[in-house]
Image 1 (cartoon, rainbow, N blue to C red):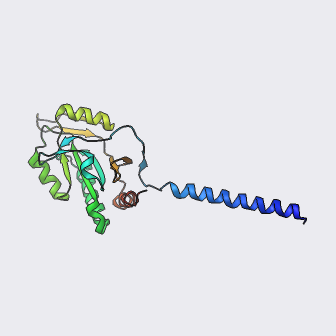
Image 2 (image 1 turned 180 degrees about the horizontal axis):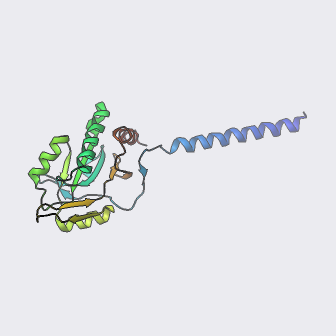
Image 3 (image 1 turned 180 degrees about the vertical axis):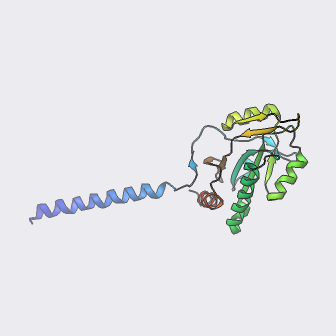
Length: 202
């Protein structure tokens, strides 16, 4: 092999190494989330509503924490309690970082879900979780902003109605940016894995 071919091979090998490095760097740069990555979404940026203690809330209140927002109602028979229990399990799985997770429950049934009921409901899962209570007008606006579906389904009596509603949740990073959409039934381990990635700044 002459000197010219040797130099060409060295150069080619260098390019292959550089290319592999770039591919590796690109792979490392994109975190492998379990949820649906919606980073950069132009919706669901905030939830300016009062909590069950009457305190006005905003995403800014939870700087440094991963925030998970779920829409539901206290008389929901299955999806809501399952999702909140799952969220409580996520907090346990995080161990010492559990206090860096904030659960937020936005009621889609403000007509029946009083502040007292919501406080008791949250405490049943985790005392640190907060419920937000919109007026009917605020609910319509925030549901539109979050692309959330909800609809009243009449029952046998005026007060025995149920609420159809979206079952997923939204996850914000510690900087208050909407990052992930989590489908119902994702499971506590998958949610905890995503929370850990966001806490690491991914």
